[in-house]
Length: 499
Image (cartoon, one colour):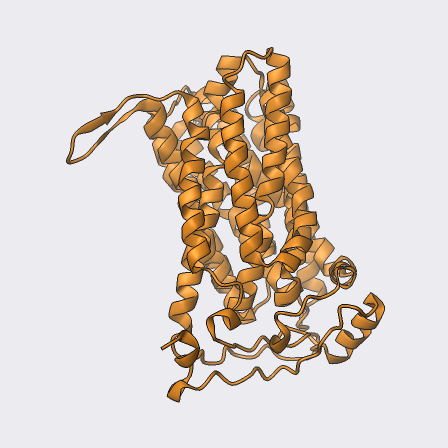
């Protein structure tokens, strides 16, 4: 018996959604499409957010399978994204790069990612989330291999640096297919009042990639023994981090392709979406790209969220790209140190705890509102960053212990805003037909912010020392706090999408 035969009692298909369908004719002009959609739109300023209706039998299990395989693939993306930061000390030493030069490689990837997010969001809405994520995975697998092989050539250091920047820029563009594709798929599978906690739980899956690349780096670059069989794997060259992670991602990609469905209808289910202006019954119908662009780009709340996400991007990338180098350079703590081993676990675990708890709070206590939780998190983050540059730069409490505690606290807060704005708010803004582009617009700004956490922050560190890592974060965090506080205060008492 197929899943479509078992998704409701007595073998009946689930009841169609209560939201009326409003077909959009792709051949019509974008202005006519916009007028048609507006006539049927839900008034979010006056309508109360409904409770989550019961799901059809078997739906949660099928959604869990979809969600797990999708999360595993995105974790695999992170294996091929954070590998550069893990080998930063070794790469810098071999090619005699300063922090600004290393930062240029990181900036190249973030620049490609930022542009790709803006463009690929539209592609994800057109291709389908599953297809977009597969394209991105194949691209990053190939480009990681290219990076590893390029590093073995006899090019001059200046030429090699340019090659590294270009390769990572292209890699960033390909990885930018991942987030819009993931958000688009899960917008269809999760209703509005489920998305905050989903964003948090999914953040936990993502952090498996962060833990995995940190542990893998320790194993490969130090050597390890396989328990039970007693086989010893010798220390590997740092280039192994550009061959092993993409090989793992390839296996995960096959698993994802065999299990993931773009939306519940492909698996025989139908669920209502209270924020879908165009009706769930037309899920296979594509909206005109001009209409999607105008709808999202013309939304002021989307741009304010994007501005706050710019700030999150700088702080988040500052931690992700520099923590390994900071340990080595400031505290002589390498990959065999207790501090490295602690942060490999504490940074991603704190990210998961923060993203899940913030999502749960926004779904329950704040009834689907994202801005109040995000604003509070930004203010807490700002206080923690100020404490960090005081303690680590100006007191005798400075050391690996205080470094671990403070970096973990910053990771918790910045990853919480990352999850609640970039995933939950983007879903709310775009609905399931435009979530790809909504996610792309907002997430692109995170990586425009991350660009400055590369060469710009590296130059500050070269000139002013490692405490500049924390001085530079504070203005961005405070700006994010003010932007989300503005949304919170100006939309109080109204159910505005993305707020």
